[in-house]
Every structure is written in C-alpha cells, then in structure tokens.
Amino acid sequence: MNRIGKVLDVNISREKGIVKESVEEGVFIEDFGIEGDAHAGKWHRQVSLLGIESFYKMKELGIEGLEHGDFAENITTEGIVLHELPIGTRLKIGDTVQEVTQIGKKCHTGCAISKEVGKCIMPKEGIFTRVLKGGIVRAGDLIEVL
Image 1 (tube, rainbow, N blue to C red):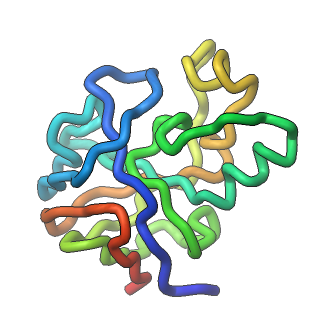
Image 2 (cartoon, one colour):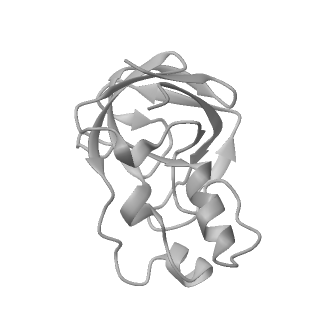
Image 3 (cartoon, rainbow, N blue to C red):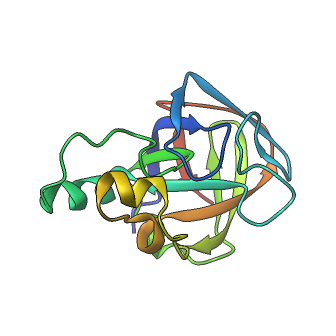
C-alpha cells in the first residue's frame, strides 16, 4: 500500500448537504475540524477525504465536469487508497495529524451531490477523520500514513 499521498484541494461549505468550495488553505482545529466548515464539531466525522481516483471511477461511468468538493469532501487526495485504511490509522496531512474514524457513510436521501451528479461515491470510498493535532493544510501538502 502506498504510504505517501498528496492534497489536491481543501474544500469547505457553510451549510451541510451542499457542494463544497475550494479554499487556499484550511485551518484545522484540534478535536473540531476545519474552521468555517458546516461539518466541523466535537464528533467523529470532523473531516472528510476522497481520492481523485474515485473521481476517475465516476468519469468512467460517463459523468463529466466533476470538480473537487462536488462530493462534499473537505480534502481531495491523490496517491493513497483511502477506503483501504483501517479505522484508527493516523495520517500526517500538512501541519496536522488526523485519525481515521469511519470508512464510507450512508448518504442522506436526496443530497445535493446525488441529485446533481446522479450517484455518489462518497458512501463507499470517502473516509472521515478526527483532528488530533491542528494546523494549516494547503493543496500540494503531503499526506503520510503514520
């Protein structure tokens, strides 16, 4: 398994259930999530990650025009098969350390993503983390499986 990956984008939204927009940098707060993101809070799904490899699978299904953040992921990654990481795995992402808390999720009915895109890959291949050590994350930062 590849132990080094890369951040392609950091994305946030002010409301839940909508497509996230790219930001220059994310300020990650310990045991909370990303400053300004609707999903941040004291719970186990503070940050969501999805690999660009999952976007490619959707493109193979004929879905065009996908942008980073379309699946409501906070971090779009490259190089690590996220959904194969065991729960409890720690990741160094930029200045932060995060712990994998959940693989996939049940998609709520009629979410903006499945309405817009026709189907959502997040329930199978997206992962969620908790922020153990806060800091800044930017596009281009390395992701290291600890």
